[in-house]
Amino acid sequence: MKKTVLCAVLSSGLALCGSALAQDAGKGFYLGAGIGQSKLKDACTDLPSGLSCSDTDTAWKIFGGYQFSRYFAAELGYNDFGKATASGVISGVNVDAKVEATAWELVGIGSWPLASALSLYGKLGLYYGEVKSRSTATIGGASGTASLSDTNGNVTFGLGARYDITRNIAVRGEWQRYHDVGGSDTGKSDIDVLGLGVLYRF
Image (tube, rainbow, N blue to C red; front, side):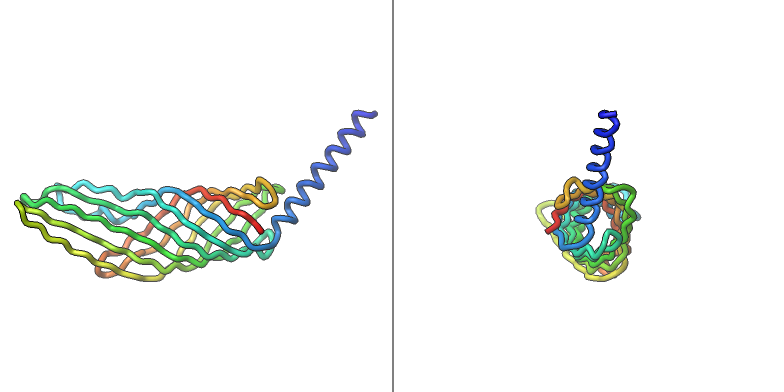
């Protein structure tokens, strides 16, 4: 009988803790940061033979937002996608090239709680991005460099999961796509980011 009462008390306490955590995670401002891997999907397509190319790099972001309820938040963030690089020899000319991309984003986040501390979420919003490219060609002792840049805006969307460690601290893992980043001078590419982040609620 005592064991049964103790189990009931513990169960009630755990349920109250879970309920309190869910309520505390319901509203308020938050800040966070994340790191992951980016892929500039079209950066290495249609390149001349003789060039080696890498279209993945380390990406990072900082973000802040407001959680209106357990189910919806609005978030502003800044992303550095790293760079894609290519190098090699074409017809006796040494070629080195890189493309770097960054973007600001404003997204809405819809969450689906699975448990008191675990939620799945989806993102949808807009970004404003900048792409910079730089290429250098060297033959003998002579070299030339060309630099180009583009800015544009488009749609971004993603999926992820969030786990609330405490009422103030949460971690999340996500995939996000930025559609057609770039322009006519640098070319356009979808950018995918697979990353982990941590956020702090005030």
